[in-house]
Length: 250
Image (cartoon, rainbow, N blue to C red):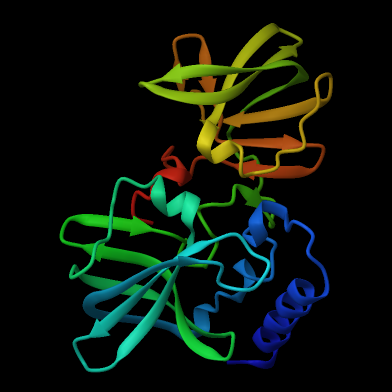
């Protein structure tokens, strides 16, 4: 592992040992030391059988994550770190004991041991996607490198209120915003996902909603691709309109 990764892990350990404060988003935000440990230069892929499943904080002070012990077909047992338990538990794809899986991820050192940070797990026709190929975690909507808006449709206005919308049978957290063209209903993401994002909204504050052109709509509700809160950007759907919280496969 390179020196940069060692320094990042040291920062996490020192922070966990020096104080008992609650870490933002349980320590899993896209800009957290844990999330930044993923190293595309140490990418690996292997097949094996699940021989152990554990739910526990990966590093002291963090919220619980789910990890697997996988007996590789080439020999040896490998620890595979998935990500926060709350995200794994809400995925349709499920991994069980004795499942034969293919693991793709990044090899790093954590707590003095070599582990694989999972990017994607494949079991039969099921795909459990945890990160993009660049290592960005799907459980965090926070965008660190702000992309250009491109040909997206923009809705800029002030937040009038927060509310919930039912979209295809799923309760979605959203806003009613006052734009120059009137009130607009906007849906972000499911409640279980949004409550982990620490989105800095305030009633009356100005935001910009980005949706593709033409916008994705369910009735009179626009489905947001991303949202700009005063320069902080959160992305909820990829360039194909697929929700990043659903583990669709990268």
